Length: 317
Image (cartoon, rainbow, N blue to C red; front, side, top):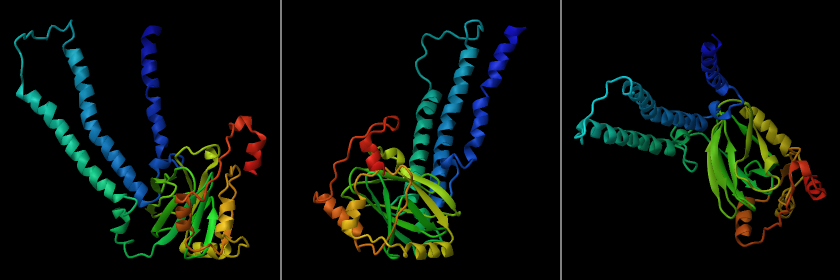
C-alpha cells in the first residue's frame, strides 16, 4: 500500500510550483505588476511570445508522449515499413508551422519594438491622452555609484531619488561619467543602456501614485549593489510642491561641485541630496568632458560586503 501512495504523493507535490505562480501578480513581482503603459506593453508582448511558442511546444510534448505510448514494444500497433521515404502531410507540418510561427513572431516583434522604442515609444507618442501633453524633461547622469536626476526647467537636481507626476509623459536624456550602466524601473519602463560620452533617451508614463524601485542592471564595480534609486510618483500638485521644497536647498550644482559629487561613492544608506542653481547644459558638458578625457576617476578596488576594508568604509561615508 505504501509503494502505491508514494507516486501519488510526488504527483501532488509537483503541483506546488504552479501554486507559487499565483504570487506573480503581487507587488514584489515587478515585471508582472506594471504601473505604466510602457511596462504593460512589454508584459503583453512577452506573454504573447510565450503563448505563440506554446502553440508549438505543447502539441509537440503531447504528440511525443502519445507516440511513445502507442508504439511501445508491447502494444503491437507499430507497422514495419522499410520502403517508406516521404510524406506530403509531414512536409507541410514540419515546414509550414515554423514558417507561420516565425512570421507571427516577426510581426509582433516589429510592432512591439516600435511601441516601446526608447527614442519614440508609440504607445505614448500616439496615445490620445499623451501626444499633446507637455512632457517633463529630466537629465540622468550616472557616476560610480550614484544617480543624479536633473530637472533643467525647474532648475533643481536630486541624487538617488526620482520624483515624477503621474499621467504625464517623462522624457529622459541619459549619460554616464565612467562605465556603462543600465537605467531600469521594472514596473514602469524597460531597461536602456547609459554610456559614457554618449547620450541615450528613454520615455515613460506612470499611471498610479506610489513608490517604485529603480536600479542599474549592469555590473559597474564595487558599489554596484547599492546603486539603487526610489521612484516617487505623485500628483501634479504634489510634484509642484516638491519642486518648491527642492528649490529651497542651499546646495548649488555648478560643474565644479558636480565633479566632487561624481567621485566614487558607495551609497550604502541610500542618501538623497538636493541641489539648486544647476549649471545650464550640465549633461552636455559632462558628455563632452568624458569624450575629451577630462572627467576621469580612478575607481578603487573594493572587497565584498563581508570583508569591508577601511578604504571601502571611507568611500561609503
